[in-house]
Length: 237
Image (cartoon, rainbow, N blue to C red; front, side, top):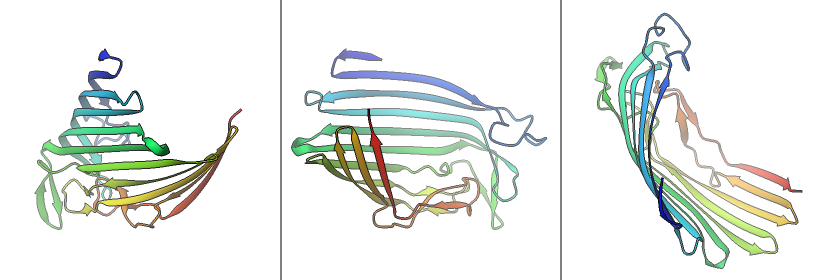
């Protein structure tokens, strides 16, 4: 980390990790001799404090390289050797206290995740599809969020926010796309002498969407939660 002044800092990082073949998959004769998955992460970034410390912004560039990727097919349970995958991305965030009692939290991420080298040919409806060059499963190219709150006085505050996730592929062959979605949340809170009461409404407009999936099968996908209400009480002493 390099910090030339109290309002700015820059960093770089390099890391490497290993995941044995049997860590997330059952140990069996068809995977016991497989090499561990290796992940190399490279990242550079910066953070800036703005407006006399009332706001901060961050930016980072990163590359993740994974080798010896494997997965279990959701239907046949056969171990699939995916190969090598590279993800290049950028992440931006901004937080700040605005005038009039407003506060903001915002973020954006772009990820270009592709299988760069794979020996596997996936067969979908009798058609052979090479996995090399396909986008990584369950990884959106674009995602973003923003959250705004306002102090209303007398201990009350309210907020609302949007969360966006771009389209993703459900399976390694990229034959099924999970559509992108945007959800909206809202919040009302009350605070007095160590007591906090907060009401959250998630997925305010009851949007129907697919939040995630198996990642190896085109048909094992998880719907997002419908509109729901959460009431939280906290007391600090």
